[in-house]
Image (cartoon, rainbow over the protein chains, first blue to last red):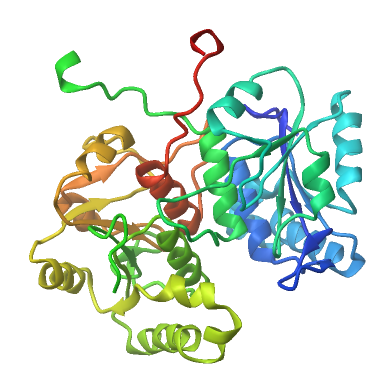
Length: 200
Length: 200
């Protein structure tokens, strides 16, 4: 595994424990498209590792098969950029296992940053978080599928990022879009060349 | 159609003319998921209208059927937020028809802003474009599917946005992710509350 620019920052796409539409805690289904999109987005921003979290063996096998297809199968020859995107993607049992895997690889337990569609009293803004992740620590950004991460994961996190808000009250972004926007806000190269006309 | 915060800014998701993997000009297939994701993202940022551009009648019918399902069919009751997202989405023949539709509705021809994965000499940055779109003009953001927008569309545009770049050279974002990131950069509410400790 080559070292990326942000190889101390990892991402977990969580399918359990999450809420369903009725507010029950469930295992949501893995969507292979989410895995592809998240991998391509993580690769763009140089994320250390992408963990697809599900306790279901059949779903784990599905993701493994998909990753193998693109990494070593016909897909690797057909679309090498997809292979490149999936090199740091893996499927894993639980969030606890993710924390352990990062700790074993890096020697440090990651600090947990949760994302959520609703405002929370403990929310931290993007500017502040951009500074935080400059530290020589390991970080794990956690995204929930379905109707969002189960409450204890939110409560036990080290940080809870402010929700992504547009100018309107509608907040039903696909998790794929939230990952793209949040990684860009935290890790995107900022456009600093623009200065007001009067200063040129 | 209610007026949104950015109802003078519109988006076109173009399936013709675009390039395929071999650099030929083709009609790409409409992906219903792209339509869903783009609609939800546009709704979040208060975009005026989302145009799905394809000259193929069968594909137009597919999109129309999908929109009807969520707007008036079973889907409208099952998931009202999806209905809300799709209210400003429509399928249309060509980019020329998009320009005409906006001109007829608003009385002004839109200024065309193209997006592209590669750097171009005429690129404009996000800070500058944020300022530009404050003007009382109509704007059309154009995104290509497949391997990107055909060259003449790029050359004839009023503006060409800088590509979305992460810290690494990999630039193979899904169009869904590019739309999310670019709308957030142009229209997202900036995190202005964070000030350095020394200034508090």
